[in-house]
Length: 318
Image (cartoon, rainbow, N blue to C red; front, side, top):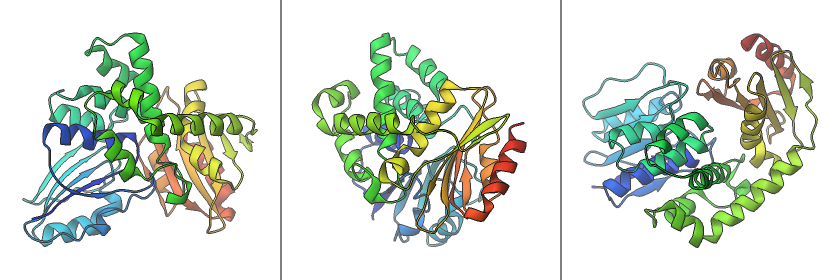
């Protein structure tokens, strides 16, 4: 029998898995990748008697592969907060799915574990830019302001490492980062002892400083659209820059676009924080779009669809 752990490479996926394996240690095959590499179940060569845990990748993006695993007699445990569409009913599927905008996968795992590894759920929530839910969880741990700030920085850096259009854009492969994190029960010790986290933080700060020099390409009444240049730093910074804009301008929606190898754009969208809904619906209107209510994206937006995207964005958040 083989067990597979399939997880999104950002802070939410990584910390969700870490919570589970701290409570339920298990030798497993790791399946992960860059944040937008969400069709991960297709990589799992599991058969009857094997088992799979899936964290922070949508059912909608993995529906056919999930059905194939269940048909082959593979037991699947599924934790996620993204748009799922119609959920399959199967005796071999255990699902913990909640698409509410103030929930991330780390929070779902925290509920499942009844708070036993909550500090990692705090990091996951900060990594998904769920600042108030993260602070609410942290309040139950009686952490001081400095400790909470350190957890927020850790979550943001873990998520930052997963951004890019390919693994070549990443600072470290998410499986390497997970193995580093998995050696620690105490995140503060992780921060003190692992130079990889300091390196990710330095790159993130430099990339964000560069992004802040870019002017928006389109200013709508309800949001802004930025088009960043074709460079590794812009592909890495897309999501973090969107989060920074969302925190600075909570009344507005924000879209960050970068050129991709298909000759179009990769898009990251943040709904207004005052009303964190609609990002997933906007992005699903385009062929390669998906995500969650507060934050979503489009893997490939053809250049000639940019005016249509801008128009739809203005309507979605008006």
